[in-house]
Amino acid sequence: MILLVHDDREYLREPGTELQTDLGVLEIPEEVEPGDVLTTHLDEGFRVRRLRGPDLFHHFQRTGAPMLPRDVGLVVGETGVAAGDRVLDAGTGTGVLAGYLGRLGVEVITYERDPEFAEVARENMALAGVDDRVEVRSGDVLEGLDSHSGFDAVTLDTEDAPSVVERVPETLADGGFLAVYSPFVEATREVVEAARERLSNVRAIETIQRELDVDTRGTRPSTGPVGHSGYLVFARNV
Image (cartoon, rainbow, N blue to C red; front, side):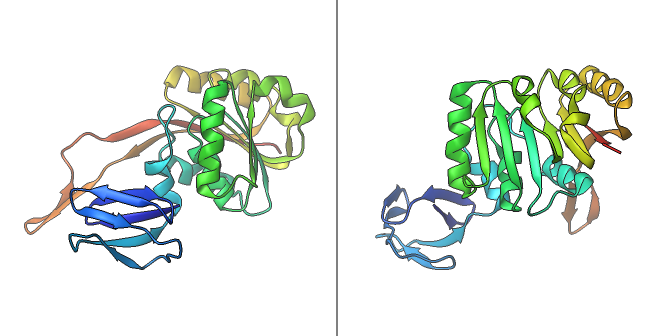
């Protein structure tokens, strides 16, 4: 799959197909490379762009609110997961986190309870080109925990995260990390309490982002809403 870009418009298409817009009809050749400019019959140009990580957030088929890129960045930065590591994930949803990790070369097993959501996530992993590294399983991670061990990180975005955390030490490798996302502060507190009894270096943070307004008069924080997305808990198995 490739992105076709014209100003602020983006279209996701396969080579060899056709794009029809008010800017004209575009025949996409089978052999196309990033950086090529394709022209519609109305002489409007579209630049070909290769899919990158942030594009996945915008073009994945969604089954709910996906994890925001800034939260993904915090998970990667705080856990240090890298190519060759193994991650156990639960609460796949749209699969943004799993997709990002797969593109880093991480081997991921991710659990999604809803079979239909799991199938969409598999399609998204194929779109991201990581279906060989990300295995989407349909089911409850708690039922499969006994068969998992030695993971470099466990990442959770589930309502039953505290119950999973209780068994995480047997799932993580020595020095491995836990990262739990929650949209609610009450759930975050439960995760922290469960983690403090079993893990070390427990930290909870709220993820907030505020944009800047930059114009000819000067630069200042935007007066728009502060971008709160949720809470993240990190801990380590040492």
